[in-house]
Image 1: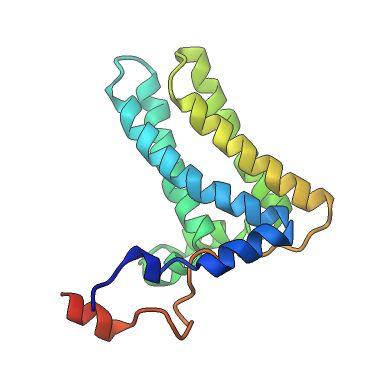
Image 2: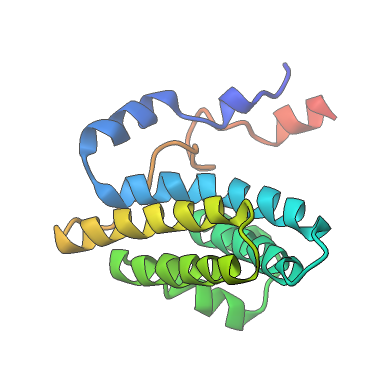
Length: 167
């Protein structure tokens, strides 16, 4: 039995999320996209010979921080300091996530002053996440987790036996 990406993604949950019209879910979806954008474009901008390198490094760090914010399960399985875990747990409401993403976007918009690069895409993605969380906050929508990524406690989540067989 081979392990596939489809075993970790809940397609039915995606449809349920779309029908919910809860903007915190949409913010989380854009957060997942931002993880990829921050890391990929941060690495791509490390090859400039200017001050943009600093913003590329910041983008990579932002991607890793967003990874822990949007996928809180990683806080339990990765050895992290208590200070970092407490910092990440502060962003469990729509309002705080809105401010967090807005601050991150502003940092990337500042990179335009040095040189206009692909980090603009990162800034726009972070802004979209911030707007999504802001709409959820202003509509007083409850902060909701997405159903895209399966929970390890679900019955159909691949367990150790499947992983051992794969190895």
